[in-house]
Structure formats: structure tokens, C-alpha cells
Image (cartoon, rainbow, N blue to C red; front, top):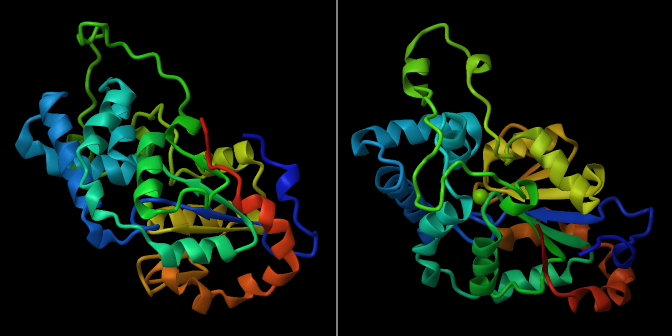
Length: 286
Ligand SMILES: [Mg+2]
């Protein structure tokens, strides 16, 4: 959907947009989705990419730390695969039933008179399922997701599932085992995702979001640090202690009113404007 006219805010407002991650931000880490996702990624690496099981935990750790997501890292070191198939494998079997409707959060979100946008590294199907399970449909103006930043992929995998290109794989575990080897010598990933600052800037640009008037909520300390670097006001979620680059820290989004009461200061002035906004259907920007 187009961003713009219907969300114009008075110039005097300090903030005009709230940007939210999904996983472990809109719902708690204790839901078990993250742990399940990690297991599914390992299973995908073994079953679909033929990676030896014993090597997976260490490899995942290096890829995640270096490239932002394991998926981005796998592409960087030479694996090619269909993105939709990957997402359907790692997200398709998540325990979504653990996510319950959260009417408290829904009410808080709807009472906040600002543009509200989702920004997740996950695919649009996963984001939509989470919002549906949490009862948060209609709370957000749009979803910035994997497909938003990675709209095309010309896979080298043919229709038989065979890899037509004999790409040599880069041994990242070996790379980091050698003292003196640096980040700069690592292969680049074609996948655009958080916590890359340019990925965040790209997403903000697509949605027409001004970072200097936006509050960014995320459970990842890396994403928070990058968000701060691009000019966002940052809130670390899931931890009451601030990390580097975090302006605020919240154990849960349920505490948002206590931590940021000023967000409601303008609520009354804007309540009439919001009547039309709440009714707008959430759309995926992909
Ligand atoms: Mg997250």
C-alpha cells in the first residue's frame, strides 16, 4: 500500500511512527518459537543441504553472528536454495498454537496515535500468522518483511531440485579458526536483512519512514545497535537492562505505557485522526 497522506502528523510531534520487530518482541521468548525455529533450521541444513549434523551448531553460530541470519550466511558461503521452500520448512512446523491472543497489547497499540509498521527478517506468511495468532491484525499499517528487501532471487536450482552450479563452499569455521583472518575477507551475502544498517535504511526508505521521528522496538541487541546508528530512537524488548544503542529497555511491550508515557500525551489531540487509521487493513510491502 502507499504510505503517506492518511498518516500525516502535526509537525510539532516528536514521533510519528512506531516500528516493531515480530519474533520475541510482540510475544515473549518463552513461547518456544525461537527454539523450535533454530531446530528447524538445523534440520533444513542437514536434510536439504546435506550438512553433517555434528557441524551444524558451530556453523549456525558463525553464520548468524556474521551475516545477521543463518539463511543469509548460508547463501554467502555458497549454498543456493529456494527462499520460499526454506521459509516453509523452518516456519511451517513452528508451534504457532503457543501464541495466544494478546488483548492487552492490542489495546495498547490501538491507543497509540502513530503510524505503526512491522519490520521483520522473516517472510510475510510467518509475520501474518503471528499477527493472526496474537490477535493483532489491523493494528499495523504495513509489514516490512523478507520479501520487501529481497524481492527477486534467481536460484541456480533447476526444477528437479539439482544444483546446476558447482559452487565451491567457503569454509567459515576454518576461516575463523585461523588467527589473523578478518571479517573483510569473508564472502558477501546477497540477502538483505537486519542488523545491516543499509538494510534498515532501505526498509525505512521503502515505507517513507523518517528515522529521526520513529521509535524502533526489537529484542535483538544487534538490531538495536544498528537502529541507533541510522537515527532511530530504540527500545530493547525482552530485557529490562539497556544494551549498547538502546534508549529504553522493556521486559515486555506490556510495559510500554510505564516506560514511555509521553507517547500518550498527544493521544487526545489525535484521537479523531486515528478513527480512520485503525480501520485500515494491514498490508504487506513486498
Ligand atoms: Mg526478534
